[in-house]
Length: 116
Image (tube, rainbow, N blue to C red; front, top):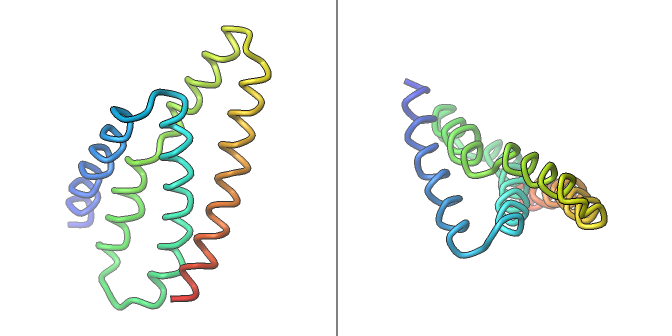
């Protein structure tokens, strides 16, 4: 049954990511969805500790929705594209924002989720 929750929530996560990609172009949309996703995963991780909802729903949201909303594969492709185009400064900036920004957003999410 948990697979059904993950599958259903994955559809919504992927649709949200695709919708953002229509508004912004790569690599900007990739950064945005990954930073939002890092914050949301941090938030949900601590916030769900205070909720009495089922583990299926929690897993559906975190693994399903957020797993399909965020995209490591697009991040990797964007970095490879920048490297192959010899845009080294852009590559360093993009990668730094993605990795360090993701860690910072996750940490903020963990703190905020614990407050509520």
